[in-house]
Length: 459
Image (cartoon, rainbow, N blue to C red; front, side, top):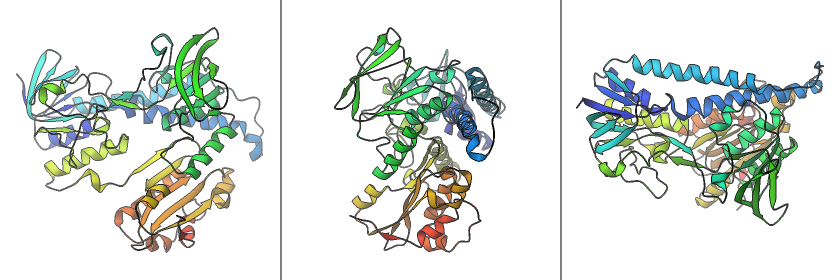
C-alpha cells in the first residue's frame, strides 16, 4: 500500500496548486484525476466559454461595422468548425500545461484513475490503494439534469456537450435564465442561431436586483433573443423538426419548438461516487460536502475545496480555497472562507461585475445605506466605444463610510469592479476611492464622480 503525506483528489483550480505547495514543502503527495486535467474551468467552463464569448463579440461587432464608419465586404458568417478549433487549441494548451506541471513535480505521484474512499485515510485509485493522514477533495461539479418528463428520450445539451458543436443550431432553446444559460444564449444568437431562453422565475438572473435584471433582459431582447419568464419547463419531447419543450406558463404559447435544447438548470457536486460513506464524510441535502470556515469536513484530516463544498462555485473561489488551506497548514496563518467578499462576473456582453451586497440585501441588513448610480450613457468611454448599455451602482454604509456592494453592468464592468473590490477589502472609507485621481478616458474614472453623489437608499 503506497503511503503518502497527502492525497489530492481532482485537478481543478485548487488541487494542482495545493499539490505543488505540499510538494515544495517536501511532503510526498499523490494526486488522482479520473478525467481531463484542469477541471471545469480549463475544459468546460471559463476558458472554453470565454473563447466563444470572444468569437461572438467579433461577429457582433463586425455586423455593426457601418456604425463606426467601417464598410465590411459582405454579410458576416460564422464557421463553427473554426470557432471550435480555436476553442480547442486554447483549452487544450491549458489542460496540457496542468498535466505537464503535475507530472513534473518532485515528491508527487500522479494517478489517472477514479478515486474512492476505502476508509477515512485510504483511497482506492484504480487497482491501487493509497493511504495518507491528509486527504483533500477537489472533485468539482457537473450540470444538473432534472427529472423532467421525456428527458431520457429527448436529446439535450449541457454546458459541456454544447462546446463540441461543429454546426450552428437552427433554434437553441435554453432552459434556465442564470449565468450559464444567458452566456450561451447570447453567444449562439450572435453566431446566428434563433434563441429562446426559458426561465421559471419572473425575471432573469434572479439573484440580482430588479434594475440589473431588467437591464440584462433589455440587452438580450435587443439582440433578438426570445425570453419566456414565469415559465416552468415540465416536459421535453422529440419533434418532427427537432425538439420541443412544454411549459407551465400564464402567458405565451405552452410549447416551444426548436432544433436543440440546452439544460442550464444549476450544478450538481461530483460527490455521489466517492465512497464518502466509508469515510463518514457528511454532505448536505444537495450533495455538497459540509465544511468548516477553514474547509475541514466533519472527519479530521479530510478537507473539501472548490465546487464540491458549495461555498462558492467559481474558479476564483476554488483557488481561494487552496490559498486558505495552504496558509493555515503551511504558513501558520489563520484564514477563513468568511473573510472573503462575494464577487463574480456575468459574462454576457456587456458584462456584469458584482461585489458585496445587492440593494435588497443591504435593505435587509438594517444598515443605513447610501447609493450612487450612473447610466453608461453618461460614461464618456462607453459613448466613444459605442457601447452604452447598462449602468453602474455603488452602495455605502452611511455610518462606517465603507463600501458594502457594487454592480457594474457595462463595457469593462468585469475589470472595473476590482477597483471597488480592493477598497472593500482594505476596509477603507469610500472617500479614499472618491479622492483618487483616475485616468481619463476610462470607465473607472467615473467611480469617484459617482461617490460624490451618494443618496439615501429608498426603503
